[in-house]
Amino acid sequence: MFSIIKQQLFRRFRESETKQHKLSYLFWECTTRCNLSCLHCGSDCSQNSSHTDMSAGDFLKALDTIKNPAPGFTVVLTGGEPLLRTDIEACGREIRKRDMRWSMVTNGILYTKERHISLLNAGMGALTISLDGLEKSHNWLRNTSAGFNRVVDAIGLAAGSQRLNFDVVTCVNQRNFGELAQIRELLIEKGVKAWRLFTIIPIGRAANNRELLLNNAQFVQLMDFIAESRKSQAIDVKFSCEGFVGKYEPKVRDSFFFCRAGINIGSILIDGSISACPNIDRSLAQGNIYTDNFYETWETKFQPFRNRSWTKTGKCASCSNYADCQGNGLHNWHGDKSQVLVCHNQKIENGLKIRI
Amino acid sequence: MKQLKSKRNWARKIIGGLSFTSALFIFQACYGTPQDFETDLLIEGKVKAQATGLPIKGIRVSVTDEGQDLMTDETGSFSFYTIAKDSISLRFEDTDDAQNGSFATKDTVLTDFSKPIFLDIALAEK
Ligand code: SF4
Ligand code: SF4
Picture 1 (spheres, helix red, strand yellow):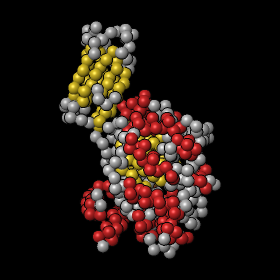
Picture 2 (cartoon, chains in turn orange, blue; picture 1 turned 90 degrees about the vertical axis):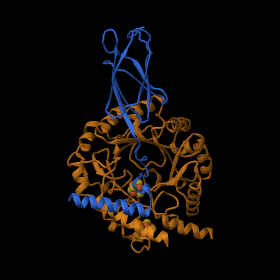
Picture 3 (cartoon, protein in one colour; picture 1 turned 45 degrees about the vertical axis):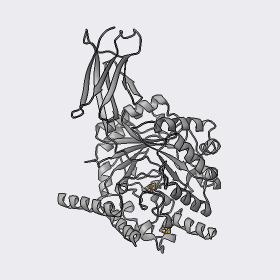
């Protein structure tokens, strides 16, 4: 009974958040150059990206259109691999001058002690590093022979900082599925406080690689693993925001499913496109910083993000969970958008049937 | 308009508070990082030679128990962010031998964070 009331209240909360659409989290795809060639990469980056890095000046000009940034407003530097840029610290300092925070997602390869210190000096406040398994499975997914040791060193550095809001993300797949408990132990041993797990949607390089995707029974096991891990205080384990997980709401996260793309999350992509999470189909871009005022675009456009009724199609059209799921995370809509790419809830229902 | 906004903010807090905790207002996207609500401080300043008043390049400025450090630039200036604490211990050290002169190490403890921090540090010659 209490959980039904909570869920109802949460729907109201989500509605009010959508109406207000306070921008508090801004991705900046500052480069699409990368020093790895991961098997699951969903972006069109490569070691020699066809895009040149966006200049700090162009980005800052767009940032300066934001009036009254929300408390804790964070610019999240992403790529490609942001650390391939040598001006990250200078960009970070400029962001801080504007009374905003900044953070970065990295594959950890270039995260040396010297860089760690210079990033902290430049006011970096949060960091996410990807660790995709124990040595063999991490290196397999990351398509590198020496990645694991470097990443583990980087994790040690970041976990040792009192300043950083730091977490590790793991992309769960067939190869590392059996290692999750060991990865959790490794992270605890390294002093990591938070661990986020996500699964891969079948786009980009992942579309044709079955080893990257979990079957239904495994997906249920993953939910159980997270729910169980959350009972311990040793490390804060959670499932990413990627989808509505039915019976496991809200046991695998701190709160119910809420895709905040275009509601609180915006982005400036490598070509200047204005959108939300970088993994969202690029056809949903709402403007471009080279032709539009960024903040005006945020305030006046983004209708497909704030009114999700267009996702009531395909299997979502007659779904009894639509009120809570609203067509799942927006990054699950690609191509002609006639069908949601992944329904996490369906995976769970089917997985539970197999178990019975 | 202002009234409407503040009403909405209250609704946000009440509904949010009833249905969950502050976790509701803290989020991260799949490929993103956690948000940053930590309190930190910007510490800036300039290091000069006590005798001449000239700026000293290459002095190592470090936060004693944070493992954070940086070097002063051509103008003797330094600027860095560090986590806010009741007190912050800083060390100014000449680590480049006689290259930019030889100066004695100086330690400072900061306890007043009520105003922007700009430190004028004078180092005695060795
Ligand atoms: S069918 Fe669509 S709305 Fe229903 S749970 Fe699946 S993704 Fe969500
Ligand atoms: S689009 Fe995907 S990654 Fe972005 S907030 Fe929604 S669910 Fe999360």
